[in-house]
Image 1 (cartoon, rainbow, N blue to C red):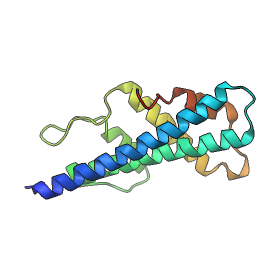
Image 2: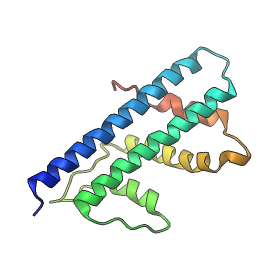
Image 3: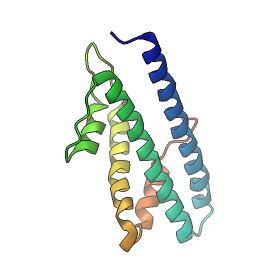
Length: 144
C-alpha cells in the first residue's frame, strides 16, 4: 500500500511539472504571435524549435513520473519514447485512467516526439521552417 505522504509527494511533483508545461506553452504562444506579424527570421524559427523540443521533453518527464509511480515499471528499450507515449493513452483498470484524453492529443504529442528527435539531430542541416511553423500553429493556447 502506498502511503499518504508518497501520494502527496507524487501529486506535488505532478503539479510542478504541469506548471512547467504551462510556462512552455506561454513562451510558445508569445513566439507564435511574432510569426503572425510576418517575415520570419531564422533565429525565431530556431527559438520556436527549441521550445517545441522542450515542450515534448516536459511532457515526457510528466509521463515518466506517472508511469514510475502508478505502474512501477519503465522499460528502457529501443522503443522507450513511443512506448511511454502509447502507455499514456491506456486505461489501466485498478491502477489509473488514461492520461491523454483523446486521439487528437496523442497525435499532437506524437508529432512533437518526432520533431524532438529531428531537432536533436538537426545540427548539420538546420530546421525545416515550414514544419516548425506548422507545429507551433497547432500548439493550443495556455488558456485552452
